[in-house]
Amino acid sequence: MKQVYFVAVYDQGEAGELFRSGEPQRFDGEEEAQTAADDLASKHAGVIAWSQDVKQGDEYGPPMVFYTAGETVDMK
Image (cartoon, rainbow, N blue to C red; front, top):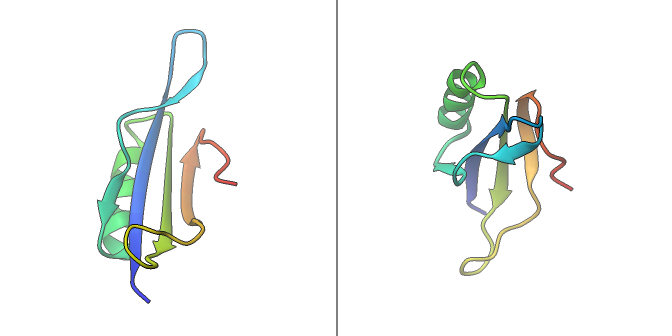
């Protein structure tokens, strides 16, 4: 089964609220996603990277988080 990898970044507003900055970036490999997440961690309030199995069509399995830094949301 094929896996895809995503990295999302979060920033904080003036009142301290956490929000996702842009859309998650998609990567073909875990190492590539990890490198991007490491780089983005110093530029944002938080970063989260996860993988998902690709099922039929545009269906994805549950997210499996493999990297977090800073403030992020719960992926559950």
